[in-house]
Image 1 (cartoon, rainbow over the protein chains, first blue to last red):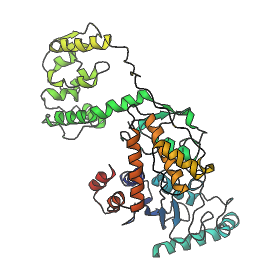
Image 2: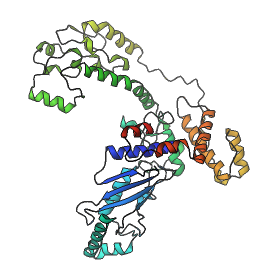
Image 3: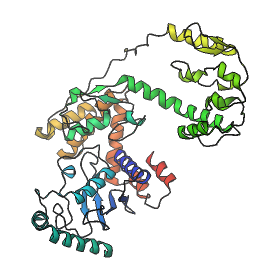
Image 4: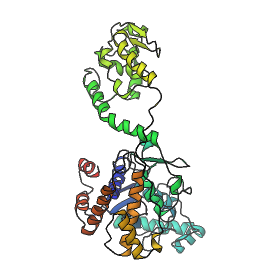
Length: 150
Length: 304
């Protein structure tokens, strides 16, 4: 619908004019409802230097319903499912129509630095994060290197 | 003005929605359409997650009026500012920021004496060549209390030379002699017409439609409601429900407007939207032209 497209264009404009550090995104070539985004791994975390690609899919009900956000790059993180789906409260039950794309991307970026191992989407990652931090960081580093390739 | 815009669509003057700003108990602002739409999904304030129901929404008429005035004078003001900048030969063509102004003052850079309109933007202290001005600090109209929108265009009357000023008998602001009559007229008009004209409420205000539990109704009842509202009765139960919901949101948000659109217009809009969704035409193709390589100007055009 028109009002919704207008809102998406506004999100895009805001993301371009006032880009938060370390994230970027844009609609795909032929569909404004599907966006590609990139999040750079935050400094001083094992994700540093990684360039992680995501897809953001909006529905007709945006902004009253959250978009579906998925990592396209391989991820090793306590709150990211094997298929790239993200377990983040603001993308589910704490969603509010006041959030825009740049808010979503910065939230995901901060999720990278502060995982929540108590609601794990990847139990292996959560366990390593809690019990064997060194091994966790090693696995994450492998992910970061993988992100350069794809 | 950004603070006054809707937190969901961040727009000010969209004919469909933003004229209307609503206030609720936590006093976050939204436009009527957006908040009503959002409440359909969840009964909470989108900004603070406090519980929220339809009956807590209040139209914010004062802000409504401010926005109306702002949008009507915005163009004029911008144009006037451009003109006065263009009229300053020695000045930067770009609007001087406060920072620049301060820097100039501190460094005591001798500013070339510029013709009249500049006075608005250069404080008199900066031009050492005209010490008289300091003594008779004139107050251009812009700085008189509560300038009305039409009264900001007098800077050319204020000259940098020595001018006699008189205190206005009404508001006590020093006014250049030649402007005193004009100023007095305005001042008196303001004093007399002080009590704000209350909005004439002669128009019978429209009553908002009730929220119905549509999912529990039978198709027959739904069709009856469609007929009552003047909507098309074509389609399955799901289509009927979404049509009635859409109509209720649009109708109720129009109720909050000072000049609500007619029922027919709302119905026409819904029909058009349904047509667009089913045939995937106009709107989508327009937006699908936009890619990340598109010129920002085109994006601007499409999004407005």
